[in-house]
Image (cartoon, rainbow, N blue to C red; front, side, top):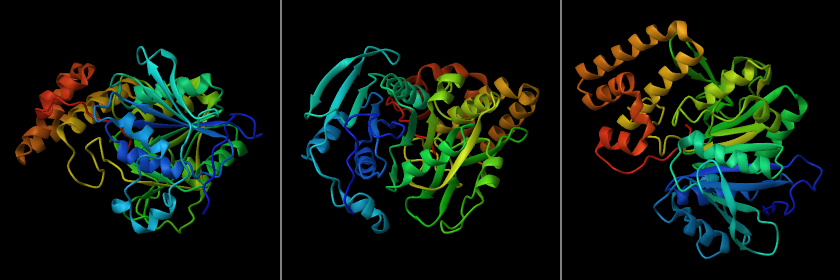
Length: 383
């Protein structure tokens, strides 16, 4: 399979220009693997933006070295069934540019470039750790300023099928009321299993999430209309957003930092009359839970993940389902007591801190230190 190089001039192909936004925090190996698959997309008009959320592992240097052809992807940990999405290596060098930020809200001029053409790869240095929503919002602002008609928010722990983006754009172009569109999200280690068909249904009375199609075989053809009707939100590991959605609904709410940003975003958009879409033939392979500390497969979360999940749940409920807040709060406290009884003192403490000290979230480093004893910032991805 021959790789397809992105157009060097956005908006010249007759197709809506798309910016792909990949959030990175100390995860350059995952990011490089993701990029190897992205540069094989068959969509004719796209650019890739890597938002680096204050990494300390030399991520930017490694990513640039990969783009220049000086570092190669290690295929050792890529499942055999997926190696065709990342090998053989795409031709290098890839034109890139680094953009520095004075803050997470205001971008400075481009600082460096490699290559003669308009860069296919832009790396934005936030210089901070503004969380999942904050980092992606930086990329969205940049994309809109560059003329993007769609932005594809994509976790860095993913691989994409070459047709994935084209299928997403096609589904949205068929129904202009669709503002966000998800793919068929498949399990990275077991590629025949569905993690989610676009997104999930959320029951605000019980605070339970049910991913559409979870656990089904990838060969099954789910009914697109039924899936779309069931969706409360599109899972943020892979979500295509239209320019009109972003301009009408606004950016993701950065107060959450981790978890529930997608649901908040979807509720706001649906209240304005937008719909959520499902591109059934768009396939993305997702590792899931690599950095947030919550695999979502029944295993216990880290205290850090538990704190932010609980805090964000209560904040979202207070904003949109206030009559249910006391009931959800009581249920959360009950969960903390059960954790305590079963010996999970750290998780119990994390839940209670989220209930009674939600202000810890204003300083993610301080929150992590109090919850885990580690001074290192937590990365952000969406499961």
